[in-house]
Amino acid sequence: MKISSLFSGPTARLLPLSLSLTVVLSGCGGSKNKGTASVPAVPVQIAIAVQQDMPRSIESIGSVQSLRNVAVKSQVDGIIAKIHFQEGDDVKAGDLLVSLDRRPYENSLRIARADLATARAEATRARTEAERYKRLDQQDVVSKEQFAQLLTKEETTQAIVQAKEAAVANAELQFGYTEIRAPISGRTGQLILHEGALVKGNDVNQTIVSINQLSPVGVAYSVPQDALAEIRRAINEQRASVSVTDRAAAVSRTAGRLEFFDNTVDASTGTIVLKAMFDNADHALWPGQFVQVQTQVGLDAAAIVVPSSAVQTGQSGSQVFVMKADQTVELRPVKVLRNTGDQTLIAEGIKAGEVVVTDGQLRLLPGAKAEPKTISGEPIGAKVTVAEGKR
Image 1 (tube, helix red, strand yellow):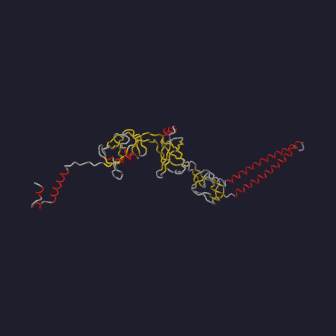
Image 2: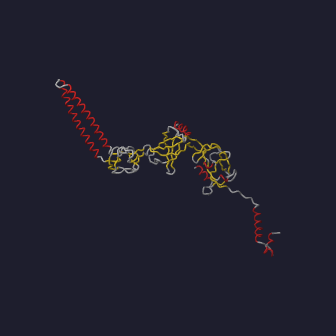
Image 3: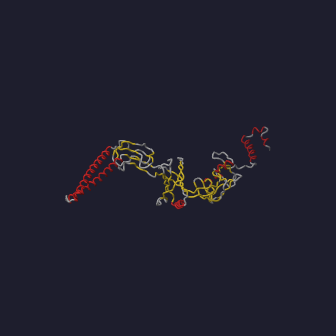
């Protein structure tokens, strides 16, 4: 019986609605199953394998250190009369920082100079008498004992003069200490004491201000003991260099000089401390700052490089999905040379210029069709893909 006959005549009004829908849908479903369904392409992100020279480096975390840090203290007791700098100023060695009340030391210097003048007068008188009695002694006019006493007095007064000269020099030195000058060039820190404060000479618990040298600076970091031999070999061959990066502060410095090895390996961590020097003329590196350190010890010339996200671990080892010209993918085993940052160096399995899948591998099977797309999901052309891969 034809379907059209079911809906004609008086019986059509008695046919249930559910049966009508069942018949109609059954007819539509039958016509759809006759066609062949196509499998949609899997959206993926891709990159181009490139061939380039890649530096071989050891990654570490280090901290910036000031090569010289001086706590400025007073060498004499006194009252701070004047501060000649502002907190955070850059100062040079010899710049005047603090003046103390100099009046007590001026008085001490005057007294020492007066004592020296008296001693010199006594010495002159003793020398004159000794010379006069020397002629009398030659004439046997005076006794030998009296002449010896005069010679002794002359020598004694000369010794007193030398002692008074030393006292004057010491008083001048103490007077000079009332001007506190910068011992090194650097940047001043927080000022601890101010005008009117009493300072004690050479008090270990009392600091006026601290000065940090900012140029050059050192970067101290630790490397595993297994890397020590390679680093020392690179230094002997004059191909070792150190660079530091602070991504948060957008700071990067290269051409650091590796100048210090600690004399022992830390037994608890199996690492050894190294220190590199940087000129830091612009003061971009700051004492106490944490930075990422790369110690370059060699170079892999003409290496095949792909993003690390392209390399996956399978049952037989490392593997990479490679996209062919017809946009089908091939699962290819690879041999990884090493990882550096977000890049992987491939020893075998990939050639320069081949397209590798960097995201979307979970939905792929060998031979499946893939569609390159950007992170936002928009399709990208082949030319754009190649350009992005080369960058």
